[in-house]
Length: 469
Ligand SMILES: [Zn+2]
Image (tube, rainbow, N blue to C red; front, side, top):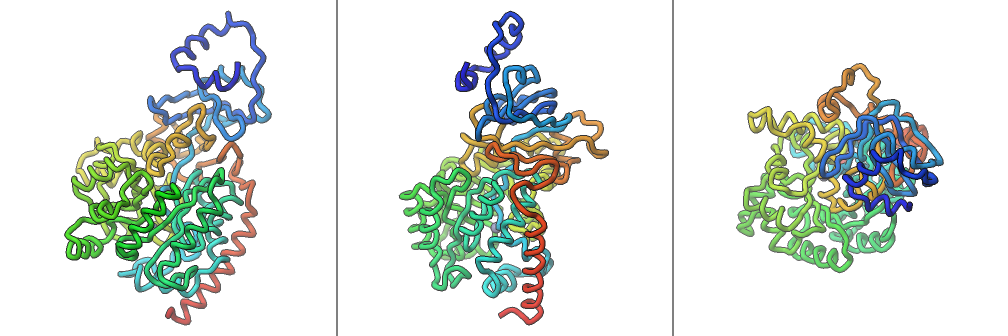
């Protein structure tokens, strides 16, 4: 029997045949590349099936079988990983970040009007190719260590982020930034549009990288350019990543000048569609939510960054209830400071409970759904990633559960959301390739990246001490 045939089996039929296995003539085992066994498999499929003693079988870059332990007998695997009773899940999806900004992490953390007074000048003075590449690689290491297998990124020199992602072997939806002022990678305002087109041409068809446009926000890109980006994105069938409805002055200005909410404003410019991924969406009303849902826009919910900046709590619970495409995000490491998604889970559950004054809302299973399937839907990649199901790409994480804070383990969702941390991730598999095993990165020289980061930090510290322009 071919793996394709196995994939086509409906689940009840499969169970029927599995239970009839002894009477079944012994077929030759199928070849597989990698088999993960002795695992508590949390599939995050539509039915939310779990297999407390389960296996995951990988052939090439795809999952070919996911199910109970007996399934292992059907496969002759090149390689077997014993998960030692750990939790096995689909990789986590970080739907919005700026990975290269790891080099600036912890600088000027608790100051007002940080974006214009501090971050933009800092970037203007210091961001170059080298900083973007090494900063991104460092951020990517942190994501892989925390079980993130796909990230969406917006930055300058985005091709360097793509090179870093390729090097590390992580999946990315990567957007070249467009802004209305001279940027580190484009001396003329809006030079990012041209750069984005070249970037998209260079990385189109890459197995891991989906190149995208990243107009920074409605307040840093004018209406004509937003319209143009929308048109180009349709032509090139490329995603568009943007910050949306994040700032109170953004809302006030668009109201005053266009009599529209930020969501209505983008809709009017033709940008609300299934190519758009909008980060934050804090200031949205019921009409906006209906628009975001009907236009199939992805929403990146960066709760921890939003509460740290005291901006507000986006109505992500309402979005999730309405069936919007909402995933979780860290935002850049200057905003949220960490890049793993596991560290977001507890906050998402607890802040939304507090916000509604109701401990029943945002249960752990829904939070894990947002971090996996939800993230895949937000990035419009749900046919490829987001759950452990035959036919999907093999993005898999193994979490160690032999840890004081995870014993006993009654409910895998509660354990993940309320007790686990990113350091519990033991092994990360992306596109069928083991990129971290027993917490050791296999694709990147971590010591070299750390040395580069320290050298960059010295340069940055000197520049800050001298005073930014
Ligand atoms: Zn951001």
